[in-house]
Image 1 (cartoon, rainbow, N blue to C red):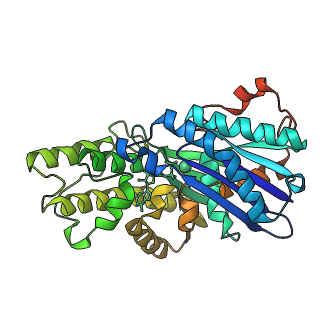
Image 2: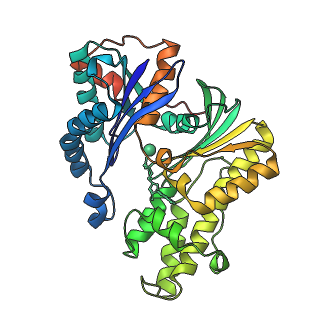
Image 3: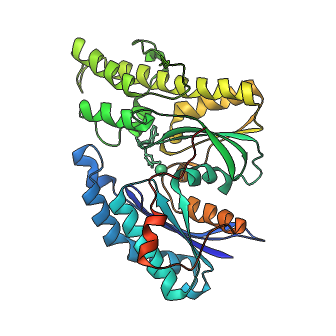
Amino acid sequence: MIIIGFESSCDETAVSIIRRGEENRVLSEVIKSQIPLHEKYGGIVPEIASRSHYEAIDILTSNSLKEAGIKPNEIDLVSITQGPGLIGSLLVGLIFAKSFAYSLKKPIIGVDHILAHVESAFITNQEIQYPLIALIVSGGHTTLFYFKSKFEYEILSKTRDDAAGEVMDKVCKYLDLGYPGGPIIDKRYKEELSKEFKFTIPRMSDGSNDFSFSGYKTAFIRYAREKKISKNSKDIDALLSSFLSSIVDYLLIKIKDFSKELKPKSIIISGGVSRNTLLRKRFETLCNELNVNGYMPEARYCTDNATMIAWYGYEKFLQNKEKDLFDYSLNSYSRFLKKSHLKHK
Ligand code: KG4
Ligand code: ZN
């Protein structure tokens, strides 16, 4: 079966074509990152994002068909991100995907972006076993799941305020270090400086298991003000390294506590922040300590991509639980574009 996936929920326009069934492989992957467009604002500007998706999606689609060496009518299923994400950006992808499916009279399936991030670990590791714990950590989300099987899951913890990647982006914006902040902090990290500033691991006063990252941002800015640290100060790397080290520990402590309780066979970390070198290193050490198989997607599947959308769309299609895979009508958009599809514990 040949599946085309479209992703346009945030600042990447991506189209992928995959083959699933007897063979499981990627036929083509094309992606246009909007980072250069948003860089000067230090964050994503929604209107610029939707316009850029609109300008890119048709060209990317014809390039992906060319790269895969297939004709449009050879496609068996269209898979599209239905949220969460920026509404204008989601709409561009959804309208394009629906029109594409309609013109070919092919089935279309909508998938949840966060669940597709979990699925991204399976693209190159099809042997991953359940039950599993999965942490999705990006610029928009920090959510920890327990999966009994592919479609039976519960949320163990999610952020009450900022996402982990978001606080990295915000502190870098504050000090005018560039955008996105995560990769900048990653490169500047120095182990020997990572204890110079103290960041306290957050604990919820109401005993909840949720994450909270806004305190990290406040503490970072307070240190920067008190010690007059700016972009060119000598203490900047120590502040960034201490900040990153504590966030990584916080993410892993949660995984460790839940793993001890739930005894999963596998642990997945995915989403943009899972590209982080320190997180990858410490996660490997933790999995050895817990004696559990740990998986992180390869770099191009950590951040937003359309292969994970196509991959997960196929899995959902096999479930065959969708109401109508041939509903191309306008009034079905609201059914597609729900704010979040996830059930909290
Ligand atoms: O998954 P993603 O592409 O988009 C969503 O937010 O859904 O993730 C982008 C986030 C940004 O906050 C970015 O700073 C962070 O991932 N990021 C990183 C690294 N690469 C990207 N954070 C830490 N280290 C990195 N190497
Ligand atoms: Zn994402």
